[in-house]
Length: 116
Image (cartoon, rainbow, N blue to C red):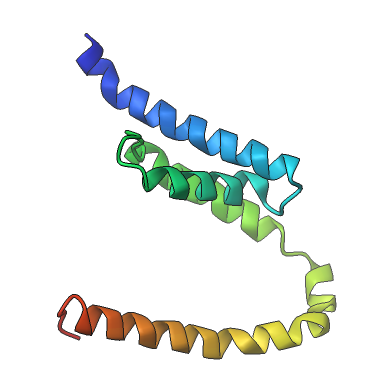
C-alpha cells in the first residue's frame, strides 16, 4: 500500500519544499516570494539526490497558466509611463541574451558534441 502512495508523497514533498522557500522569501521580503522562493528552494533541493522530490506533471500546465496570469497582470500603464527609468537595463538585455546564447551554443557544441 505504501508503494502506491510513494509518487503522491514525492509530489507532496516537492510542494512542501516550495512552500518553505516561499515563506523564507516572504520573511526576507524578497520580490515575488511565491515564485522565486519556490524555484530557489526546489533548485537547492534538487542538488541533493537523497531528497526524492518529483515534478507533478499533471499540475504543470495549470501552474503555467496561473503563472502567466500573475506575471501578465503585473503589467499596468504605470509601467509604461516609467519605462524611461529602466532604459539602460532594457538596452542591456539584448547583448546579454546574445552572449548567453553564444555561450550555450559553444557549450553544447564542444562539451556535449552536439550538432548545431
